[in-house]
Length: 80
Image (cartoon, rainbow, N blue to C red; front, side):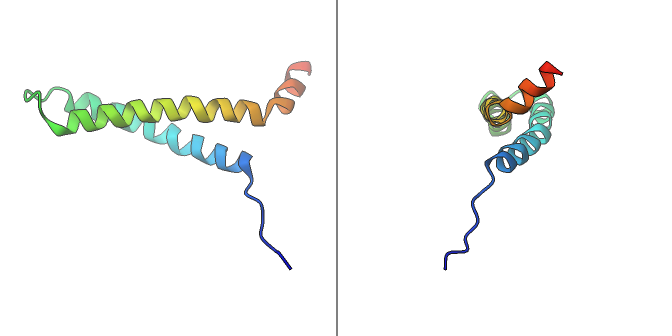
């Protein structure tokens, strides 16, 4: 008997959006704080820049997935 559960895609997308929503401003703040480093080869600004860019891209991707997964609910809210 197979008792494995299917992964709830809506829950995964929502949790990923929440985590990215928290990490995106943190990476932006750290990027702003480390960008004033006079050494152009410093690792920290490059790291935070890459993380901030990746978080932004993931936020857009998961946001689109969230809209697709909840399209019927969105249409229902719009129709009133």
